[in-house]
Image 1 (cartoon, helix red, strand yellow):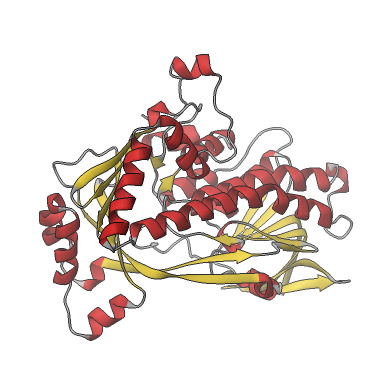
Image 2: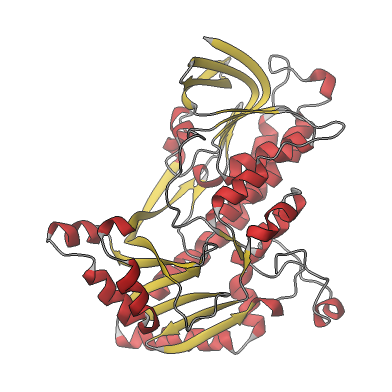
Length: 431
């Protein structure tokens, strides 16, 4: 068995894990990152996880990678909702009084590649990546987690660390091995989402998010960086299994898409030919009451799984990473004291991290659940109320800020009124 020591061992090489590793090495700390995927193999088609909120853009800029992804990012200018064939909401992001105002679409391979760029310069820490590597157990000593046992193609590895971080997603093995599943409440929502990609309809603006609602059915239409449109089509929980077991072909989905978005009907005929053109996402949220045990902490979906509404998963993972890194770097002390055997991240630091982040996560979850309920209202009177609410928000910039700020600008202070009136500072966002 190979044994190694580091200051922080991060399990999971998604946006949160990569961002944390980068943030820590920028602060002079050493990291070992375990990545389950084999970098030599293709990740396959991507249907989701590309949306980065304005606050996520701000965080990427702070991590020093925004310039590297600028050419690969696609800026989004507005959010449009149509209900029963009529536009009820059209939000322009340029009107928000923040320094970073626009969300972007950014393919995950480009994002992960930028986050994985080595940090260089005096005082920079080191990041060693083990891939493919799978965490199979936790090391423990005196009631605290002291590292990870991992399986690799070359054999088992033990990584002793002052802090272990579970950044391994919604089905987190680290959460389970740490016993934190006992503190988790998983809430399935009443629907699943079928994701697919279609040719982009010619009549559509490529810089808009679209939501289309028809009674209790709805779909999300998001511009993708490869020139297609990503579609998230809601169906009842378990509905895809019922459709396929009954022998129905993908034509039933094409019919639903044509009702929701007639302009996309031709694109659906061209791009949706077999069930293999789709991917199913089981929709649930997970609230983990406690994100840490001594020597270990969870971030991202491992700590707080959210629904895909308004694309919050990537953004909260980035926010977790940026919030956690300086707390850990300070707690580990001077560089001369950097040894996993001699230094531990105090439990108070991990508790402070959760306390500082749980409010923003809770507000985003509450907004998502409200939107989920709004989208699925099917009774005629309820649908009329929904349209009335959206029109009211559409007519009031103040309501737009109040409703959307928890998703797109969590915890951010608006610009001073005079600066906001002048359009704010020049954005460091992709154009």
